[in-house]
Image 1 (cartoon, helix red, strand yellow):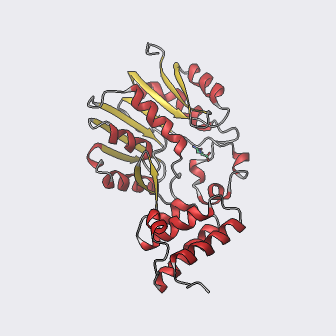
Image 2 (tube, rainbow, N blue to C red):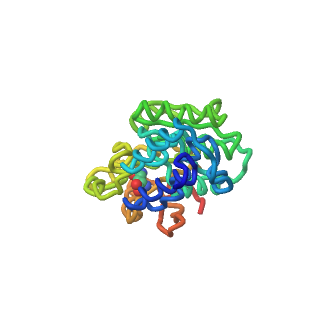
Image 3 (spheres, rainbow, N blue to C red):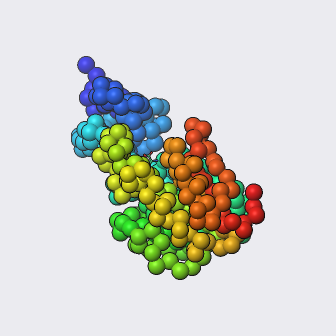
Length: 290
Ligand code: GLN
C-alpha cells in the first residue's frame, strides 16, 4: 500500500479522477496543482516524486482537484496565467489570456519595430492587461491607457501593471469602450467579445461557466463590438496610427468591410499558430503603409 501523503500517490489519484471526466492533460494538470500547493515548480515533482506532503497540503490539493473536476479553469485556481512569457494575475473577472492572442502583440511589435521609440497605446477592453502590458514591456518608451467597463477588470489590470513594474507608464480607466477618451494614439489594441450569443452555450464548460460573459458575448452575430467601435476610431487614431483587432473564426470579411465603411483600410491579416486569421491590422485611408 503506497503512502497516502506521497506526492506521487496524490498525483496518481488526481490523474485518475481527471482522466475519468475527460480533462485533457490529467497528469500534467495534477502536477501543476500539487506544485502550486507545495510552492515548488512542477519539474521538481518529476525529479523528486517521493516528497512528503503535510495534512494541510493534502487538503488544499484535494480542494483544488475537486474544483478542477467541476471545470474551474486552472488559471483561476492558480490565480495566474502566463502570456508573452509574463505572469498575469487572473480571476473570474477577466478573460483568461489565450496563447492565440499573442498574435496581436507580435503584430504590434512588428509594426513598431524600434524598441526605444516613443509610442502611445490604447487597449480597449483591457481585461487582465495582457495585450497592453506585454507591448509596454517590450517597448520601454511606450505609454498606455487601458479601458474597461468592468471596475473589477480595471483593478486587476492595475495590479498586473504594478507587479510587472509598468505602473508608471500605464493608466486605466473604467469606461464603456472609448467613452470620454479625447486623445489620439499611435496604436490601438482590442480583443473585444466576439462570440455569437447563441454559440456561447456550445463553448467548453471552463469558458461558458467561469469566464465573464461581458468578455465573450458579441451580440447575435458576434460583431456588435466592431459595429460600435468602427465609426469612432478615426477620432482617436493618429494619422499614421494603426488599430489591431482580434477577431473570431470566419469573421475577417465582415470586419474588413465594416472597417472600410468607416475609412479604415486593412493593412494586414495575421494568422495564429493554428493557421486561423486571428487579427486584423487597420489604418486610416491615407496611411500608405503596406
Ligand atoms: N478567444 C475566446 C474564445 O474563443 C473568445 C474571446 C473573445 O470573445 N474575445 O473563447
